[in-house]
Length: 498
Image: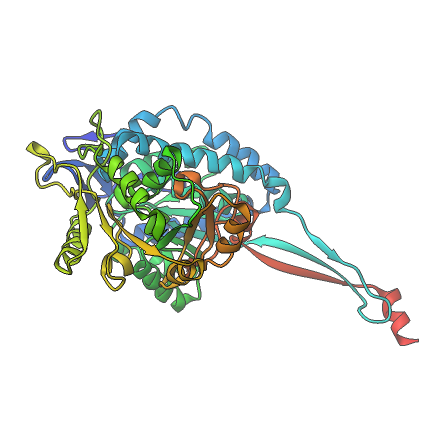
């Protein structure tokens, strides 16, 4: 990799068919904390570049898919080696282009490595087939039900945890036998491109490709008839656009979309420091910009004061600042449009007379005018306010009282989303009873949030939070088709004619 540093910092290219490719047009990557500061430049692919990437992946697919899953796993094990060596540099770049604190940016690439290893541990299972034996006098065939790779797969990731999120699908798609094109986010392409290119360089040419560019030139990643599947993580509206585009070519889709996750604190919830720390992280990690963060906190009326006091104590320690600076606990929002939206829903709650409590101080100096928002809680708001009904994707949370378990379940499910949820109670039986009534794809007990995901388990949403599952053997099967091969058994057939 030619880590070309231009006057504006980091520069990344495309990676197509085993070769790095630079473009005349570039994406300029801005620092969301420092107005006017450029972090670097990424190549901006033309539709022709996109077509080349699809062609390269298509050409690489037959040989890659012909290997056994264990043979692919061996090559993938070698390809991820040394991934940690540049992690400090990658984290510094990601912190600057995304705005998140350095430690989170460092964990981003670590999670890819962990997920990669967990996917490879499934290699023996991938090629497993099921045999249906003939039934004398009824069904004269012996049928083998097996799985087959799809072909060329496009994986599109968002700005918030781009490298980690790739880990939920990229290794599974490759292990399943597909050739892959990764599309990093246009506003945070640099660190992701660097990491994935280093892996791609150690795989056969064309098996793994990277394309960055403006969305209007990316249609071929979805609508080219040679693309078999698109795996998209992003907003609900983004998912609707992807699905609409994919319908033209009947490209199949997995959609991992936004959430409006409910955390439900029952009357017997444990509210010690450890549990309150978990809740705080579940709300405010990545400045609230995580799809599976808690977005609505429902608390038994008798415990409201404790939850509010616990979050208040932690919010009073929050330090807004630059992601790379010592002591910063919360960076800016990634985009100015998102800052405007979060400011708006906080103001709307204030105007409605809600009890809005804000914390921390907005940074000054060269950070003045960055996309910073003071973290806030909204205590017992009207349930029709947007801070309750919409995904905030920022550092603000409504805390809502309830009186009965039935009411808590009803309120938690009364939303468009169904990504995750959590139940907080000292009683495991209660946790299972309430948790199993939540309409969402993943439920935590006495915990919540991305850092606590079981990376072996299938993950995905219900309702408008999307469909399809990532991780685990289910995540591998999502990148395969099921195929049946049926053999006639003459003896059984003969027995049917007597």
